[in-house]
Amino acid sequence: NAGVTQTPKFQVLKTGQSMTLQCAQDMNHNSMYWYRQDPGMGLRLIYYSASEGTTDKGEVPNGYNVSRLNKREFSLRLESAAPSQTSVYFCASTSPSGRFTDTQYFGPGTRLTVL
Amino acid sequence: EDQVTQSPEALRLQEGESSSLNCSYTVSGLRGLFWYRQDPGKGPEFLFTLYSAGEEKEKERLKATLTKKESFLHITAPKPEDSATYLCAVQDYNQGGKLIFGQGTELSVKP
Image (cartoon, rainbow over all chains, first blue to last red; front, side):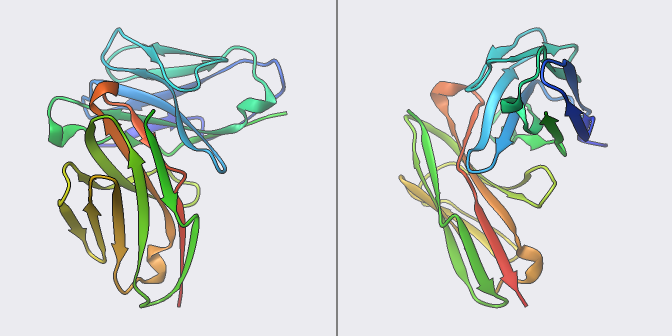
């Protein structure tokens, strides 16, 4: 049981390039989330998917798109990377089927630098 | 607007020196308050969930408590391996499963 996995672990892009961050979970969770973490800013929600087939914007969605490919996978795409998108990106998942299962479990992160 | 503020930003302790981390929150309807631990270069690791004022949870040297306005993470006789950033987050009934995070407290425990 790997939990939440993310690829790649590190990435360097030039301004204007595009890329997709991949996330997968093997816990049969319904909901998945993408966060970015910046120094002094804490974790901020980019997009989330409450269930397979649905996606919604979070606090900082501009410049990003997402795809909930199936129940296991949730990808984050940067169409035209900007230096302001340099950050550490975390994927998380949870299954909000009851109060004791609302914990979000996080992946190891992707460290992205945009030059 | 939901808001979470953690203090202090950084805390340095000697091994064995007990202390507390604070998480103050403003939320319209608290569904849960979460504590996570984050080691450098890693993702947040779940520690506790608290649901109602007066609730307490313990795990080894850590004890989390909750009031209507704040939560405390008490660390008793810390060890160097407790060094990490501790994150607090709240979940609002009116915001689905989304978490609102504080900025974290970076704890350093010296031997």
